[in-house]
Length: 274
Ligand SMILES: C[S@@+](CC[C@H](N)C(=O)[O-])C[C@H]1O[C@@H](n2cnc3c(N)ncnc32)[C@H](O)[C@@H]1O
Image 1 (spheres, protein in one colour):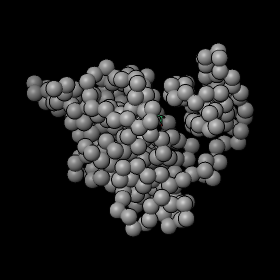
Image 2 (cartoon, rainbow, N blue to C red; image 1 turned 30 degrees about the vertical axis):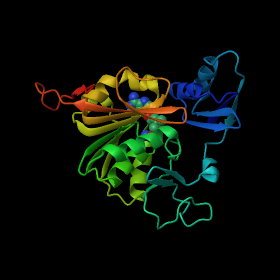
Image 3 (cartoon, rainbow, N blue to C red; image 1 turned 180 degrees about the vertical axis):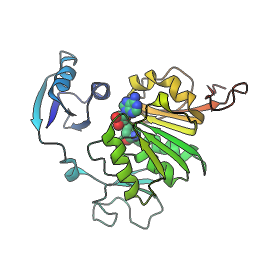
């Protein structure tokens, strides 16, 4: 059973906090925010922490699969993202199958990452801009695996995808296969960030701002060259100087990491603020 918390708000900051409160899915509809939870206790705790001026209800619903009906083909930058059951030759497709684009086939299942969220799209754009052939890439908080799959299609040759949610690990593997990637192309696991022994040319993390802040040192330590952080509002900067991208209310920070000459890899470098 899924528990649906419906809140009378379209405030992105409230939605952002819902991820930290344990949400498994969030949908914005008609100025309401609909948030899915796996259990009633977590849903009630999230509701109790809401500002007093908001009204909310909690309803038990069958496990979420109704997204399938609403799924669309999404485009951003050079990417076209579609679920496996929609084709680019359909009447509603925004592009034709022959248009030059990078196609990502993604079924999020019960995870986050259908490709339409601005933070996912900003991360995709940053990956395309900064990824070089044969780079190694780490996708932290992989969800459906959309960013790891994009990294593979952009030419990365060593790719790890990690998430605390085992469903996300499974969904990333399924989606990698749906994109024709070999099973070894993306190493997906529930490995915790602090347990990773390797460093990566590019680290991308699309997670709620409090989670990013909690893991900032670890994220920096495992980055060799570029650290892409998104998941926060554009008005909520992180505590350093950086290049930032914005889409709607959402922001993405691209940090150039300068290796420490006196501490060769595997230790990560400093953020280059030059
Ligand atoms: C906003 S979703 C991003 C999904 C996908 N990468 C995208 O861009 O669409 C955030 C993901 O981070 C995961 N997550 C949250 N805290 C985490 C942590 N400490 N370590 C790894 N993954 C985490 C969640 O389970 C969720 O799948």
